[in-house]
Image (cartoon, rainbow, N blue to C red; front, side):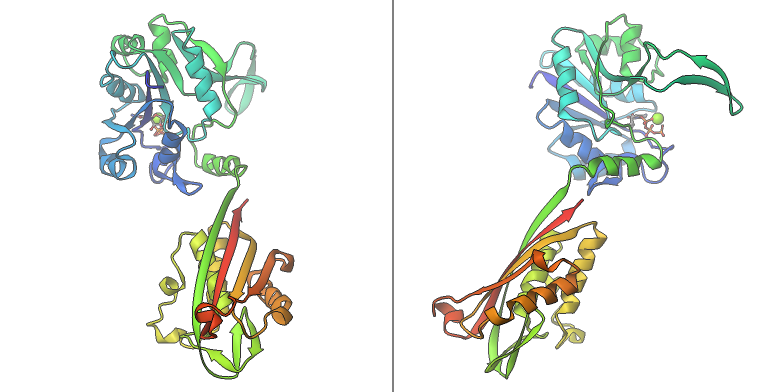
Amino acid sequence: MTDTAIIIVAAGRGTRAGGEPKQWRMLGGQSVLARTVAAFRGAGRIIVVLHPDDMTRGIAELAGQVTLVAGGDTRSESVRNALEIIDPNEYSFVLIHDGARPLVSPTVIGRIRDALESSPAAAPALAVTDALWTGAEAKVSGLQPRDGLFRAQTPQGFHFPAILDAHRAHPGGAADDVEVALAAGLDVAIVEGEEENIKLTWPGDFARAERILGTDMDIRTGNGYDVHAFTEGDHVMLCGVRVPHTKALLGHSDADVGMHALTDAIYGALAEGDIGRHFPPSDPQWKGAASHIFLSHATELARKKGYGISNADITLVCECPKIGPHAVEMASEIARITGVRPDRISVKATTSERLGFTGREEGIAAIATVTLVKP
Ligand code: CTP
Ligand code: MG
């Protein structure tokens, strides 16, 4: 919608929420503001209003995606600063949204935009359903009929430049832009808002937002690949199982190629590099280390980030030793280390038809795929 400008106000300090200004706090792996901006992608030209102190950070996180404008001391001043830079020849409509409402849905945005085809202004709201009282000194002092009462949300949409004129004429201090529009005599249509479209205001609102987001499960897939060369010896360690063989695998640790591939797959799914990053081969303390240390570390890192292993599939590539007789034991060993049910772990093998280094029995290769789920 190239005729629509979107103003996201995020110049407040979030004093009620406390701590770091709320628009920069992380929510489900993304800053609140990045999430809000992403919700409007494709809906028009986005202008983000930031506190002057936050400009450097805004440029780092959002440059190229949005136009940045410095905000004022009040929300309405911040809105006005953005309205003033919009070219009336280019944009017919403007949607004004709180940066602190990252859970706004495309449905609500679409409803507002549609309503502007037939109304000079439109805003999402929810009818009040709870009984309302007045109160004083922790006692109910009276009843307040709830008929015709609504809880206002954003984005609030307006014809441009009517809302610019309304802001220029307003004395300031409005709670939202509907208040400014009403003062200028504009009709404001009420469209259905959404319960999930909360404004992060108090400390507890972040946990609530995380819970709402939790319904969108986060699923990640990672792959890992590893190779170890044969050397002299009488056994190999594969997926935690000691398999007798006429050779051994050469490596800094116990050279468990299958477990290394799986560990790298987990790090990969987390975008956390690989084993070498967490356990540098240059560090002598990992010499001869049992590979379950690496796998446990990766599993624990996933857990700390809120992910569980949904399933893993490991393929060992070798002519010898034969894997089939040990595959069930290998899967149960991986299951034990990761704490995943054995029927979610697969260990299988293939030869490479005597082709290449594995075919010439110079070493063993392994590939692994893992799926991590954050419920
Ligand atoms: N806002 C703004 N400029 C201001 C004040 C507020 O752009 N001078 C923005 C906030 O960043 C927020 C939205 O307006 O996205 C709604 O305001 P509110 O929830 O009150 O946020 P804060 O003012 O940051 O929070 P608090 O009032 O608790 O300090
Ligand atoms: Mg405020």
